[in-house]
Length: 629
Image (cartoon, rainbow, N blue to C red; front, side, top):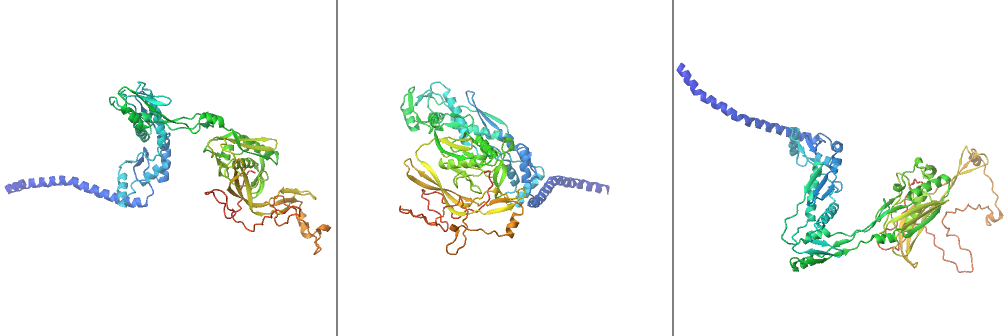
């Protein structure tokens, strides 16, 4: 029995050992299966979570900023707080040339400013681009600690022209500094010694190196350096492409620097005929000097031209009378002083509010009449619309491009109807562009009770412009009496002057220097509300009028010959359009044709050239426009 037991034990031992080895081999597979199952379960759970989540997946970074678990808005705030835009925006590339010169370009100069909002959107979109199960796996991976760094790639558009200009200037100086006689640039030509064996820096290759280095700098939010190495010498060949890139330059017109009030000189454009130069070099013997003519392009406007013509001509001038209180006069004077001498370069835009700034008591502005809510009220800065309107009238006559203008709510009396421009700080501005080829200057001065505005520029051709407004419709004002405790018995006080309302279309008429009309151009439509005349009367006056009907006796010339009734003549309105229904007085001269009254508005046929904007077909709605009249 003992023997049998030992035999049995001996036989059983190896089999037991095999089972243990099998279990050892099965353990990793089992663990892997469990991990896969667990990950699958997490992925499935992640898919469910992703469906209901509006947050960035776990462990997602942009640069060194953790965004996992944040909403897109929170992620954007976190990126800005972490200096995502500012730090990367200050990144710099510095490329060293063989002579020790350095080309330095910042990310901001190159337009590569990281955008936190776009980066936050990219972080939120990570993992969500595939199906729901792929999103679940991406979510699960982050949940289990897998870190995903999306890097800095939300950059503005590279300003290639700015970087190329910087590189071309540095490379040109470098190549000219070689000074071994390989080539030289003279006033009207380039002289190349064939076979000099000197290789030049390639502007295109340097540009590529600067851009590559700059992107690295932005990614690391730091300064990155690189060295440019000249290509190997070719044993006497002439690299015409490099020479061309070194000397070529586009013409730059002279300009007026508004900050320093000085003229910045222009620059000539330079290039040469590549094909002709290549033929000349091939025909030349080794060591021979090849002369390549330069193609020089003068700038459209040189410094001398600008000096001779700068602010030479008065393009338009207008003088308006300043009515009203001394406060109104003060406000107009302050606004004029803020504008006087303002210079607008070609293509730039003038903003009245941007130039004058906010009208405050601290700046010396006082309370004066202004339009607000359909009535004339006292407001700090009231009256300065006379300055903006006078400038607008000059802009029309100078034929400049108006970009932002609105008329007043009510008619103003210091300019023709339709030639005004209201302004109000924070809501309404007046703007125009310098649409000429030369700088403009606005002179605005106050002398006594007169405001004078002049626009100086450079007039290249003769002729002049007039303006005219055509009345489309009109509406008379009413006279209203209001009782007021401050009015003494037997007296009255004018509270608000009445103005009739109207809708007008304004046109510009262009004439040549001989006075021949060239074209009629539609400018704008202006809608003015009627403003009732308000008279303050003593308390009890209106009640007495209601109980008593005064009898008015008519003079003989006011008696209707047919009925015998008295006729009361209405007070004439000085602003009303002419009444074409009254027949002209009889004279010996042949009568002039009487214009026909227009029962309803029909848009006029513009005589301007094709492409002009036609006037609107219907009057604009009467919308109250606040303004500092």
